[in-house]
Image (tube, rainbow, N blue to C red; front, side, top):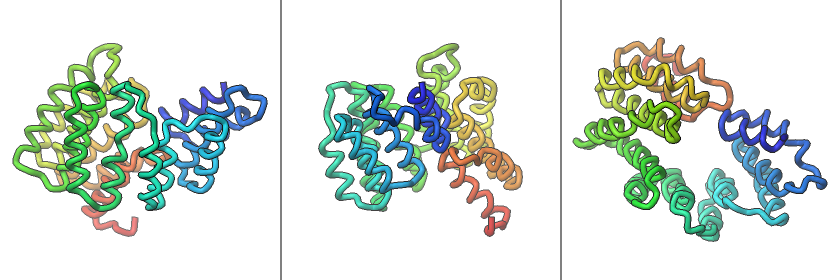
Length: 276
């Protein structure tokens, strides 16, 4: 029970401090699944940016017989900009022959390259991963990532590509009890936020209106964060930064998406309250 509770708090609620506290009863030698508990401890410490402690936990889990997914251990090095070591670890990860799992494990192809400041290479990696035909759900996720990266230097076709993505994801998002509702809702709201930034606030409002009741009902904080971000982007386009700040500040709780802070910074830049 402690392990299951901590897993839910970590991966769905992003309450890392609470998850670590609730995990403690599972971190005993009498626990037959100790290796999984220790690995989760490493993940939680990584999320809390306690990098040396995180690596220690991952190394202990490996000594107990569990090292996959090795990407999290690698991320503990990437977070401290030790990219060579991070990539050494990623290179050792097991290929399972499960297209979805194996494709998801390729995320460092993008994230490490972005962190190194090589936007063009990250863009190319995201585009390549978005075109994988044997894992459509993961490929669609990478497609949204690819479009998001393109937003830093918008091209003439970007808005049309976002409209197409949202048009494809919305039916899955609103399907009652749909197995892909969470992923498709997040992608659609991400598209709404991006379209608002590109100047099409009407499209953003329409997308938000189609999800504003169903999205909160899913019970995922990350979805609620993205809904607030999309609404805030509409406010920013309307030159109402104070309204955006109010919406975004309500989401700051220690487990929120980094994008909440990115958008909040842009809102403060509009208000002139840079000290905040």
